[in-house]
Length: 77
Image (cartoon, rainbow, N blue to C red; front, side, top):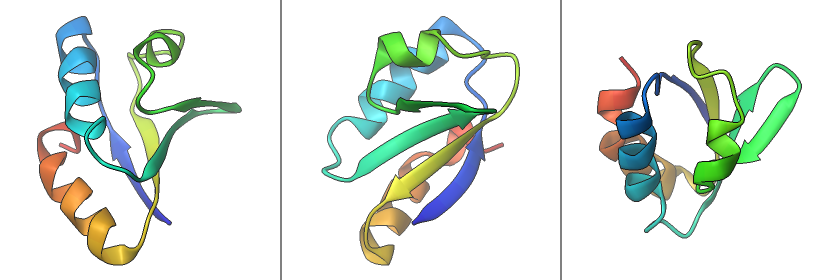
């Protein structure tokens, strides 16, 4: 499992983020405190506090996780 912090912050970034992660087969979760939601669920993401960075947990083999992380680079800064 790979973990990285992502900052979504706006509705447009959330929609763009979901469109980036949806094509991947791997399971991904977003964690904020004690709340965990599916990273492919736009409604789940909107239930979180988007003013803070969220922890993205990628449940995949290292090779696939690296591809996912590379595609999500704009959200990790």
